[in-house]
Length: 212
Image 1: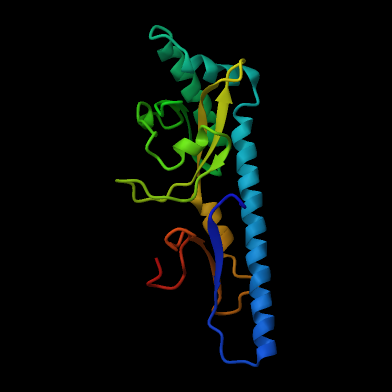
Image 2 (image 1 turned 30 degrees about the vertical axis):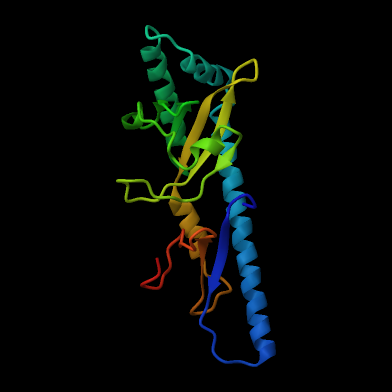
């Protein structure tokens, strides 16, 4: 999470108290924020491990390399095979909405959701970083999509160490929202939510109306 430009914000309506009581309350809120940070880091670590499991089988991993270099005569059968494999992983890992694989120029070559095959993700906010190494992209909205998306990626290299493409997983945001919704230690009026450093936008919902 240290690589993510977010702030765990704790909001609480505090009545006027003596300085000591106020300091104790603020210390409690700092502790809550730290617990949330640990929970999110653990969730992201588990998610990255799940993404790597897609590549754990050498045969499956090789299929991605072959897909990036397939000829027009062999690509259809290979694409179908990889699509089915990604669909199976999506069903087995409830923390993901979908898996997809794209080339170094951003073309989606295979996916658990076949509707996105052929799309190009080169303009998406995660693309450039995904070519450099494992990456976690903050929740974001995309044109025409009413739902926030959070993407984690894992680059795939050939036997010579050259980048072949990128495996990506779209995380189920329900897990993140559930982590932030737990109110232990917050009293009656407290809540926690993620806020982007750039723009100070809420990345997880507030239970109070009018906060977006």
